[in-house]
Amino acid sequence: MNALTLVFIALCVFAIAYRYYGIFIASKVLGINPDRPTPAHTLEDGIDYQPTNKYVIFGHHFAAIAAAGPLLGPVLAAQFGYLPGALWIIVGAVFAGAVHDMVILFASIRHDGKSISLIAESEIGKAAGVVASFAVLFILILTLAGLSLAVVNAMMKSPWSAYTVICTIPIAVIMGVWMQIVRPGDVAGGSVIGIILLGLVISTGPFVAAHPVLSKWFYLSKEQCSIFIPAYGFVASALPVWLLLVPRDYLSTYLKLGTISALAIGIAIVHPYLQMAPLTKFISGGGPLVAAPGSVFPFLFITIACGALSGFHAIIGTGTTPKMIDNERDILFVGYGAMLVEGFVAIMALIAACVLVPADYFAINASAAAYKTLGMSTVHLPQLAEAVQENIQGRPGGAVSLAVGMAYIFSSVSFMKGLMAYWYHFAIMFEAVFILTAVDSGTRVGRYLLQEIIGRVVPKFTEKGWIPGIVFTSAMFTCTWGYLVYTGNITTIWPLFGMSNQLLAACALIVGTTMIIGMGKMKYAWITAVPGILMVPVTMTAGYYLVKYNTIQGNYLLVVLAASLMGLMAAVFILAFRKWFILGHKPHKSVAKVMPTA
Image (cartoon, rainbow, N blue to C red; front, side):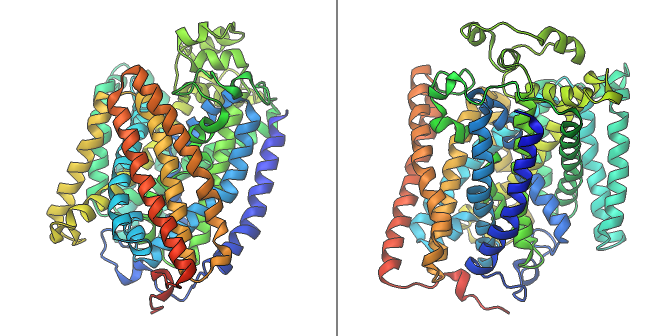
């Protein structure tokens, strides 16, 4: 199959979905009201609640939700063939992921920017809220640890990547000061400054990496990266949102969208064919790149994760983003639109993996021992390794094969032949920047959640402007996931992240369904109920496999975490279904419906 055909199909489906399905949900189901003041205005504090230009908030939201999932998940799912992944990304993004993101963002805005756990408490009951609080906290810790380990793998021993990532921090601060203090509201001026400085950093990256002195300054070991990333997360969580978090995410969006657009153009020029078969023998089980030997069901869904549906998006959608939405009409653009763009990113990642010869793809992504059992022999791997000037065999996780696939497409353009090594290192840097933007936003949301939990006992922590509480909860939360980053590895944490991520997505869809029923729109409840209910057996089956597999492997901490998360979420599901039954016999007004419009 020609890769360009898949790109065209995805773009057409996403455009039609946004124009018709997205607008239908926004207007008919949710009843978006442009005249209703948002929490960014009613609770503005200059720290977390801040009215923000819709393009800037789109950049922040997209940068925050689009992390390792849409890049690495489709690459690993390619082991089942390109067809299952492509179908789930396109269908899942339209009918599950984008719906999930928009509905939960709307719910948070109508609940004063509150978290998913407090929304669950309001819509389902106090017990559901308490259980959801701890479940979300555990999931967020695992998520940030998994994402950070992906960044560590991309940054460590790569001066170019480390240099670019570090430089985006002061550039973001300059942009934030310009748009907030020097020229308030001057998004265009801040964007020009950021783009020029980012372009300068990217263009000087190869020079820094080749310089004998500068390269040593930015040559970070795994341990150094594992300390730097949590330290950055703490700073981004504690500082005012306009100073570092939003401008850095907005800046990163230019790099993300620019690179993905360039990749799409490269595919249009090169017309590469997908070397991977539509379906491989691993659809029935035994795939070497999944945590527990299992079939396309359920591991396709938890492997692709954020590329089609993500519970992490519910954390961002009820965390930083709803506190900055300037007008309710921006919910469609930010919530539904950003997820469709992420789905397109996932399609690009899937293509980059599938243009490689299958034997080479598995040689890169499988361990040496696992590859020997496949009975395959590499085809172009020695030439690819020589072209990128690195050893690429036995580099599991998806990041290296994605970079090789992207570099192969870029270097196949006639005027860029011979630049594969440049594009490979550029792709590695791109992946690090891409993923890190979710870490800073996730850490800030974790701080919100921890403040809410501690605030149940010590009410002072619920005060949004209380600096000691902000600093304490930021440090406490960062140290928790930072410990996992420093002591763990992506092989042990990523599979559990995938399962728990989809479990949270199912939970958010169920909570959203409860809200829609409470708003008196039972006839539209299927929009969130169908994908939410369908994901319950998927995630529970994946959890069973992971518990069984890790028990055999002796990873008892992961067994306890997986079993605990499944138990907590099962309790939320039962409480929600009970609430549905009650609402079916006794009408109830959702907070989202009855709150005043002014």
